[in-house]
Structure formats: C-alpha cells, structure tokens
Length: 372
Ligand code: LLP
Image (cartoon, rainbow, N blue to C red; front, side, top):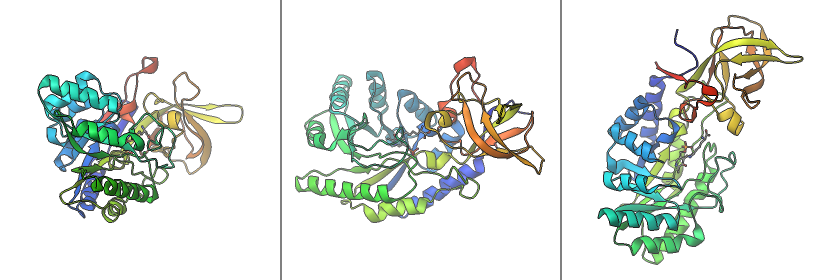
C-alpha cells in the first residue's frame, strides 16, 4: 500500500476537464487559454496542459524555469506577480517570454532598466484593478481598489504613457484578475462592461491593446465533486464571448488554474486514532495542514469520504491532523460511516492549491503523489 498521506490524481478526469475547457474556448477564435500553474505544478499535469495547446501563467522565476523544462513555448509564458526580482525579470527577458504582467509603475521602471541592460525589448501588459468585488473569500479577492495587486484605474494613463514612450518596452495589453473561486457569472459580466468602457475611452485617444487578459477565477463545486466534476466552461467562455467588445486582431487571454485541476485530485490519508473526547469524537488522521492548508487558512470546505469503512452506521466526527496547532482541523461535525483506526479517507477537490502549498512544519515529510 502506498504510504499515506498522498495526493491521488485521476488523469482521466484531468484529460476530460481539459478537453471540456478547450472545446468551450473554441467558440471564439479570439480566445487563448493559459494554465495558471500556481494551482498545481505536477509535471504530468503541466505536460497535459502543454499538449492541449495551452500557454502558462507563471508567478516566479521557478515557475518560468519549470514551464520551460516542460516544453512550453517561451512565447506562451506570461509572468505576473507584484514582487518580481531583478533576477526573475532577467530570466523572463532572456527566455523571451510572451509578456510581463506589470503591477505598478515602479515595476515598469525596473523592467525597462533590466531590458536596457540586456539590450532587449520586453512586452508588458498592465494589470489593472477594475474595482469589482468578486464576493469570494477576502484572502482570494483581488480586484478591489486598494490592495497590493495591480495598478489603480487612476494611475493607468501614466503607466500606459511610460510603456509607450520607452524604447525597451512594448505595450502588449491590459490584464485583469478579480479573484478566485467565483461561482456566478455576474462579476465576469461586470468585468466585461468595465473593460469595454476602458477600451472605448482609450480608443478615442488612439490607444489600442493587442491583448486583453481577463485572468482566472472560475470556481468549482467543493460540496458535490462527484455530481459536478467538470465546471461549466461553456457558460464561462460564452459570457466573455458575448460580453467583450474587441478591435480587429485583438486576442483575449484567460488564466485558469483551479477550474482545470481541482477536481482531479484528492488527498488520501489514514486514520491513526478515533479519540473519544468529552462530547465529540475526533478522527485523527496522518495528514495535517502541512499537506492541505486550505481549511486552516481560508476555512475552506473539502468533502471527506471514508474509502474503506463497510459500516452501515454513521457517526458525527471532527476530522483533525497531527500538527501541533489547534487550527489543524479539516472538518468539524461531519457525518461519516463508522470510522476506525486504519481506515482511508479522501479529502476531495484537492487538486488545486493543495500539493503546491504543502510545507514541512514539524519536520513532516511532504505528501506523496499517485496518478491513476
Ligand atoms: N491569474 C492571476 C493573476 C491570479 O492571481 C490567479 C490566482 C489566477 C490567474 C488563477 O486563478 P484560479 O483560476 O485558480 O482561480 N490558494 C488559494 C487561491 C489563490 C489564487 C491566487 N491567484 C486557494 O487555495 O483558494
């Protein structure tokens, strides 16, 4: 038996999900999909994205290197993030990546200096804060006016002028990302309206953008993963196809992370003890927040299934990990079939922001990986 805890990935579901996204995106020939690799960097998963023809959205030099190693075309790599170091910028420029998504005027200056030093030109898209509330967890909402991401609308004009007047920079487009785990289309409809208005305003001044990047954020069903294994990509892409007005030759870029990989992964963990508390029963498992931090960090819900219990009876439990912190709790008061030491549990919908956020606190080993 494979040593627990480990991430179990269904390559079949991954391929179906990618195919569904690809088909849905093909409704509009302006569309290009980049996989937001921060969600999961398993090589097999990256290769499946590459084979589907997707580009890749990166947020560090490490991700750029991994994407290049996996055979992504440099021109299909975009590089985002508020804190790009000089070394990371140089790496991107020398590799000839498709675009830097710049998040401040201060960063634009540095990209220009680095490009000048290297005798190259860098393509830059400006990340704009469209001031839309995505109504998601405050740790993963990013489009409001004052946060560390993006350039506020009021500073956009100056940022555009900086890029346009710089010999070492090329204005590649505008970039937006309003948040993650967005489950209704309304925020995206508003985003389309904001982008249309912005484009119109700039068109009047003779400024057009080769690309419009609308970011990622499409949510998945954490409550019923088996009933809804594949997100409604059709509704998502149709919303932009209907909603976004573009000019001749303009491309629309998407950066999907969670929606492509969340459902294909589960964290498999073994029950070490079933401990009777005063009122509660605790199922203590061998995975902790070091393996899957989403419940502890965001209060996120991951459906828990007992894979091995044969019991017809059920019981109410708190499912907790072994880490020496009281936040190391996967779920409180969940009903599971009668559970005992040695049972295997699956924490579902863990393919996105699971393994990539694992850590070694308490000198714990990183979780293993199994593909099926
Ligand atoms: N583009 C940008 C600029 C982003 O910041 C993100 C995610 C994405 C695309 C991909 O978003 P997605 O399609 O995956 O929603 N660790 C958190 C999620 C953090 C998301 C960060 N940015 C979680 O576990 O919920």
